[in-house]
Amino acid sequence: MTVRTAASVTKGDALPPRTLHIERATLVRYAGASLDFNPIHWDGDFAREVGLPDVIAHGMFTMGAAAAVATDWAGDAGRVVRYTTKFVGPVVVPREGGADVELGGTVTAVDHATRRVTVELTATHEGAKVLGRALLVLQLD
Image (cartoon, rainbow, N blue to C red):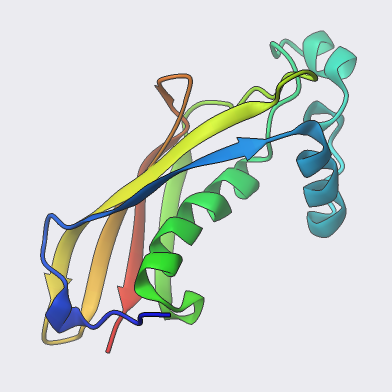
């Protein structure tokens, strides 16, 4: 595993994009791990009753998946100093076929004095943003 250094990073560097496929079973497992058993994440009838198109993925699940793009790129999840975002759209997960989320990121700032790197992450589902202004700061060597 390659661990990045601040000296090897340049503003504008693109992180390797990835597609995350989500099935309903994934959401059930995440609910158990996170203790977030809100039925909008596993019960399609309930989700529709409250005005959603269908079951939606947990926002924190999506946020974590986006962060993994940056931590995998950096080589160490323990490098995260700060991570902020806004949830701007749902990831609808139909019973059949699941859903795909396109994840990526770009280095927007490199502070060589502190060795901190800021990455703006992207997460889209069916062409629409899921996370807005997702900024993750990494402490590199």
